[in-house]
Length: 226
Image (cartoon, rainbow, N blue to C red):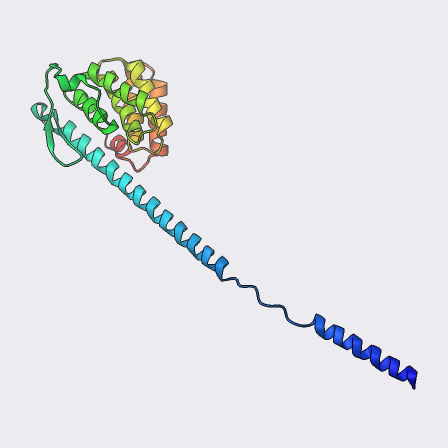
């Protein structure tokens, strides 16, 4: 009888212990973690929107700059020194080399230095254009205008019949800024400079690179018209 009582007591204690082990633990509050994750997702979304906005602004600026250059180069000689500022205002630059006190001062921004250098090129002041674009590239090598500056530097050299230096500038415009809007034009003008140097083989290679890399560009389409 005592034996049976001992067995029953031992069984009761064992069941009590197991029941205690199976008691559910309090649930972990995950709400702070969920709030942090939600805040992180929101921050990532805002960052992505800001990046998209900056890319859109850069694309619009590139289009405006391209249109500005084309309008200037297509204008009559007496109008060649008129430039459109970032505010949409027309600004005239002197066609003769008569430096004003303001012209002697260092431009206070990359955009101003670029516009000043391009105005020298447009007005036929190629030596001053060379100095301006080289100064721009020296101070702002990573600027969004750098590819354009390399191209117009090459145009200044070409206009001075400094063809080897023109080829080098056009080459930098292509190699350092392959996605820039001036890269196709640089290959086209590089070919012309190489022809002036009598290097027809490399001139043809530049045109082949233009057709293969930028088949939809206006520079490539100009080859078909010719």
